[in-house]
Image (cartoon, rainbow over all chains, first blue to last red; front, side):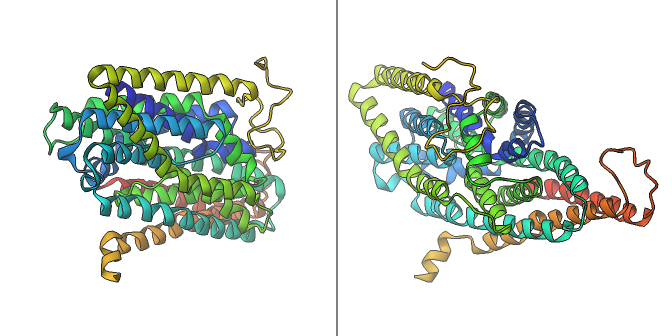
Length: 376
Length: 85
């Protein structure tokens, strides 16, 4: 059951974060929405197989492996999923990684107290990258955008548009791949923790192959289903984006993510991509909808504590009921929460059909006349 | 205090990440842009993708080609480096 929940988390991760990779390509029209999401899914799958250094960090650097129990992992995952689904509903690109880590840390605190959390790990591997990653992304994307426009300002419009469009297919592919190398790892790390807690594998064992395969598949599935609400916020909400900007933003995201994967730092791909899009806007001295960016940054700060609270609550509730019954009850609550949110989301569904409609400053993506599903 | 903070933060890794990101992210974008500029100057027309337009500036097209190759090589190299542990 923990494994299933872990995979469910990976699904929401793909679902939630596919936005990062393809949002700008969809917004500039470089790729058709479905094509973009499909491509991203495949490359996420590939990326997930390529590197394991982030999984290792998560499995060993955040909490004390010795005191992890299955119940802790389960409550942590539940906290992560609940937060992911909630932010998806409001269309906010928050960090799935922080949701997951927050959930586990919260559950751990209730279970074994402060000493069981490796605070230096949380600070060094989560907080610090969380602050720097978006700043790096803004800077690199802004620089890239300035250069791209400077260099091509004499180029004919048609050529420029077309070339960057083709380029964007490549850069979106890179972000998807990078996402797979960084994000799919996180659940693998957590599932490894769970397996260690269960005694299935030894403490020093590395992530088993079947975990890698299942995680990769579920993140790819989630990506393919697509988090249209978030794609809309990133692609249309922050700035009105052009192809050279999209290219620069994606190149910047891919570079920042791949570089930090190399150092085993689990940064938030979401924050990097959000930062890049803003950077692309700043690089062209273009009006950025700062109100949306502010809300995004606020969500980033809230994510870890909020998921920690939910994780802690889940663990406490589960414990109060006790034993297997507690796990089952939590599972049922979680599933019904997800179904409720999905139900609510039908009211103003965002899909591949209306993802690029004009932005009208609504808090959530707007209902479009083109939405084919009947409003509930 | 400073020693305290730096023991949590891998400063050298962060600086390296920033440098790599600038070179790979903004640098490759610039090279790609040079390629686009080359295409435009070389008389390449998007409506005529086989390049059958009278290529008056073959040299510009060659420059463009080289630029795009550099970008591809950079990406390939980047992936291979990023993923070696």
